[in-house]
Structure formats: C-alpha cells, structure tokens
Image (tube, rainbow, N blue to C red; front, side, top):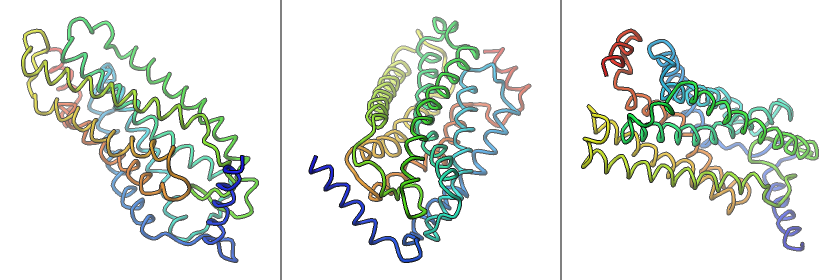
Length: 303
C-alpha cells in the first residue's frame, strides 16, 4: 500500500513540474510534428484506399470486408489526430473532458481493432493458400461480417467501461489536460491492460504460425494448395503483418505494463504509424487493387 501511495505521489510531483501558473503543460513540438506527419500521410492514404476498396472491389470477398473495416478504423484514427497535434503543440486543452474521452477512445480503439483485423486477414490468407477447397464454406462474406461485428461490439463494450473511468478521473483533475497527462489516474493497472497484452501475444502467435505454414506450403506443397500466381506478394503480406506487430503493437502493450507516465509516448507514436502502413497491406493483398470492379469480378470467376 505504501508503494502505491509513493507511485501516486511521484506521478503528481513530476506532473506539477510540467504545469505552469496558467494551467498549461509544457508544449512538445517534436511529438506534435510526429503526429502531424502521421496525420498528413494517414488521412489521404486511408481515404483513397477506402474509396478504391469500395468502388473497385466486391464486398463479397471476406478479405475485402476485413480491409474495408481496417481502412475505416485507420481513417478514424487519422481524423482524431488534429486534437493531439494541437495539444502537444500548445500545451493547452480547451475542448473539455468529453472531447478528450472521445478522441482517446477512438485512438485506442484503432490500435486494438487494427491488430485484430490484421490477424483476421492473415488467417484468411492462410485458408486461401493452404486450404482453398476445405475452407470455402468458412471464407464467406457473411462470416467475415459476423466476425467484424463481434470485434466492434467487443471493443465498444471495453471502451464504454474505460470511458466511464476516464471521465471520473478527468473530473478530479484541476488542470485541463488530455491524453498521457493524467495525474489523477489511479496508480494501479486496470484489468483491460492485462487482457489486451494477453490478446496481442496470442495474435502474434497466430501470425507467426500462419506465416510459417504459408511459407512451407508455397515452397514444398503447392499441389495441395491454391495455385498462387505471385508468391512474393503473398509472403510480403505475412512479413508486413509480423513487422507491424513487432514494431507497432508489442512494444506499446508491453510498455503499458512496465512504463508509467509520459515516458510511453514514443511507443504510442510507433503504434500510430500502423495507419500509414496498412494501405501497403491492401496493395499487396489484392493483385487487382487498381482494376475496376468488373475486371476484378471477372478475374475472380475465372479463378
């Protein structure tokens, strides 16, 4: 109990040195620039990707269903970044606790949903390459929409409880701040942190297994799998997934358990970069990414 009190007193003491007499925190122009660059790249990349996916590809493909939802999630993240850029650039938060809670929930939801949807894409590609015939009844757009709906419902329920606890904490703060400046947060780790850490390591294991099986199949058992026209692109998908988990997701969730206060901010920057990397996933996942929907449907029927 004494250690908990010491941690709480220390976080408040450190926070007090970052707050001036005008109830503002010290501006962080470097982080404002980083999030600004991610926003400038992420907004057009995901907007164009979403437009191409909806306009030129059929939602009858489970792979496209997952990618559309991933693009929507990334687009929401990019839209939420201007408030973060403003806060780090000025050190002030004039929008109140409600907007802080909303933007924080959107931001955190993207990190979680991206990891889950990327894993879904990885499993879908595994089934398409290794078990093309046996997985046809599973790889349907209907099942993909059901899986996506469950993901959004799960994240919504988790974020509702987190929003309530965050609102209560912000009401106790005397300084109008947001994001990783929370001197009034309880010093203990909430249950959702442990849940997410377990989930992200499970998803990493799934991605590793899928990558291994697909690589093994492409190199030695093509007669038992789908005839893959572009092996390099297929393997790039899995490699990119592992890179995003290793660089973007794993460090952040490990940091949530081991790092306190604003020290975790560089890991948050890394995690945010996933919204700029995901459009590359769409390009390599879909051989006909730039083609018209009619041409894609024709190619699909011929296969």
